[in-house]
Length: 251
Ligand code: 13P
Image 1: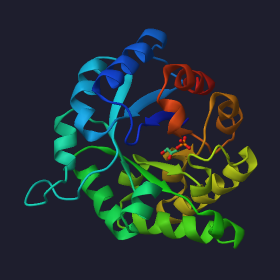
Image 2: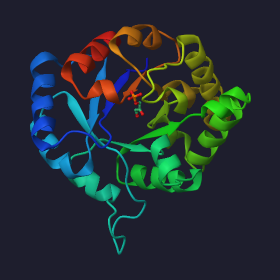
Image 3: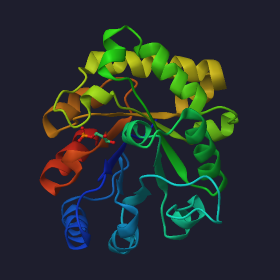
Image 4: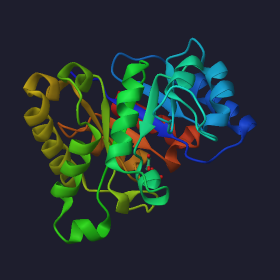
């Protein structure tokens, strides 16, 4: 059975004191569970402080991006080796904001996925269509192309350990969530593609999160879909009162 992963993507929000305070609130009000895994992904400058607050707890640390080589003359970039060194377990790769605002391509995401796996990080690979693409009936093609490009060259063993996140761009930060049926349709199609790429055993092991306006009041129904294995949560992960009920809904 796949254990759901609820991960908070803080994006470029919160300062150091509020980040650490949020961790203390989350740790005060939640405990380790066999039924759900939890992670938070703060901005890279606060990974150290958040990691220190989390140390020894049931909540894992994740980063929001990385560069694909271990070291060198890449001003402003952070490597997977550094993220691992500072205690990260996860790294979000290919988030739609990076694809749209920074022009990240599937090829670049793919390089990062390989580099993350090489240093022992678990990549959370994001895919998802825009509203125009959905309305043009291109959802399946867009999502399949992103998955194929981002996961190219992985062995089945490597693929089994990654996490995918289906995040329809039109649902991110808009308050518009994909309906459970809409989300499940895409998740099931991604799993069918994974079966084709890596075999049925591997495809059954890959966790596929849903992301896009996940809130306390819609989490339970989304997470009860057979192919939805957790959530990648933006806005609602910035406060304990809104993040904890989502964790509870998975557990
Ligand atoms: P929201 O939950 O704010 O819609 O953000 C989703 C997201 O982009 C998580 O990566």
